[in-house]
Structure formats: structure tokens, C-alpha cells
Length: 337
Image (cartoon, rainbow, N blue to C red; front, side, top):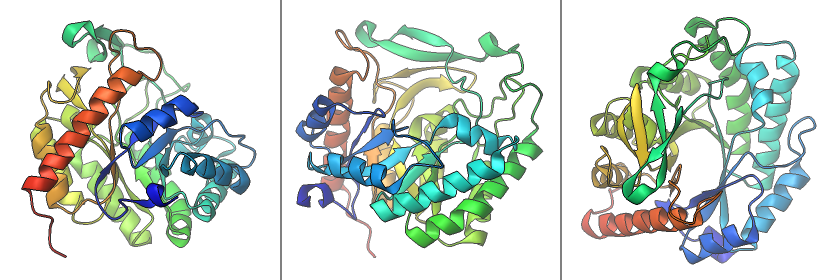
């Protein structure tokens, strides 16, 4: 697995794959020059959490393609909903999450991403992007009158209380076994939907979460820094502020590198480099703060002939990231220390 370990300790490009990635997807990741993959919600049995044996087999399979399993993004969402909303059964669900983190550490999987939004609404439709590519869209006006998604309203105070309790229970376990929990922003940020407050949608929220985590343990928690979500908060300036604040603290676990047009109330996704985000400035900022993790594309538009995982679009976007990173490395000196 020498190739899978190559590039540790420096910024590198990977790719996201689904819960049961095909051989073709992993071969394409190799062919695109990816250092590793991020797996979204692996299709593994969840009986008291993911078992060590299943996670070890998953990591070994990825390694057999000369790739590193960089992170897992999300445990089964319904299980974490019990914790996020403090519903009956949340104590058992939290214990299962803790055991999963222990098993991730034992299996050598370094990062587990999560979010704190129980309802699943994050886009309202699709539209035609460049050359007719299908892109996702969001329009707040279309979801202004959604029914309650979980039976009643949940206030910001309640959501913060459950998140704080989650951190107190899980961050010490993660720190002990060498795993980083990576918090993804609300998407779209700052917009309550279905009666549930979305609390992870601005700089102050992430600073508060970071302070809470730091008071529990010096490691074990960070951000899944989604460039698109930060741009939805208010453009490139918001993206750069987040990178320049959390990057030097070592709080950026990994990066979703995508572009958008518009902001949270109304936006569409697009190919990298054609939206409102100065992608070069964002990559340069990651270099300047010494970020040494994986960067992946996100929400690939469907190009002509694409379906499912969108292999054509993944190839284009990953190639864009590879070229941009190489240029930044050639032109911007690595930070000292």
C-alpha cells in the first residue's frame, strides 16, 4: 500500500464515491491520479455500530486499488437523528456511535464526517448549466411553507444542547483512538427548514463548536470545510475567512471544493471556476495555511451521457483540481514550520 500512503502530510486530491463503490469507480480514481477516496455512508451492517471487521475489510479493499481510505462521510442518518433531536433511544444510538469511532481508529480510518441537520431538504430542483449540464438548484421561496419534518419545532437552543452533548460524549473517544470528527456545514446554511433550526451556518457557529470541542480535547474534532457551503454564506470573502481562521488551528479535516452561483436563499451549483467563488484564491489560502489533507470535488453536474456517479464530470472536476493544486504548489512557497 505504498501508493495509498504517498502524499500523507501534504495537500492532495481525492474523490468521493458512494457507499458501495464499484471496481470501475476505484480504477477511475487511480487513473485520475487520486491519492484516496472518501466513502459516503458505506453500505455496511449497522448492528450496534459498524464492526471492526467490516471496516477493516473496507479499508483493505480500497488499499488493494493503491488508494487510501481518507474518510467516511456519515453514519446511517436515521441513527444520528435520534441523537440530534434527543429522541427516545438516543443514549443507545450515541453508544453505538462511540463504538463505531473506536472501530474506525482500530481499522486505521482517520476521519468520520457528520452534520447537524436532521431533515434532508437541501435542494429544490435541477436546472441547465453550462452546455446543458444538469446542476442542482435551491430556491428558499419553494420551501418556505414546508410542513414540520419531525412532528414539532426544534429551536436553535435545543439543537445546540444536543450538539454539545454529542461532542462531550464522542470527542474524547475520537481523540483517544486517533480519529477526527469532521463537521459539515448546513446546506443551505442559515435557513431553518421543516421547523428544525439549522445552527451550523455561519462563522460564529463554527467558532463556537470549535471552542466547545477544544475545551474537551485538543484533537478529535474538525471541519469538513465545504467551499460551496461557505460561499453560500456570502461568497469568496466568507470562504477565505474560514480557511484563514480554522486552517492555522489544524481544524480543517478535509475539503469539499465546489462552486456556486448565488447565496443561500437562491443559488445553483456549477462546474468549478464558472461560479462566484475565486477557486484559485481558495486553493492558495489552503496552501498558505499549511492544510495537509485531502481535497475532493463535490456534487458533480451531469454531463452529456452521465448518470449516477457522473464519471465524466468527476474526471473533469478532479482534473481541474489536480491542475489547480499543481499550479499553486509551483507558484506559492510552502509555509515554514
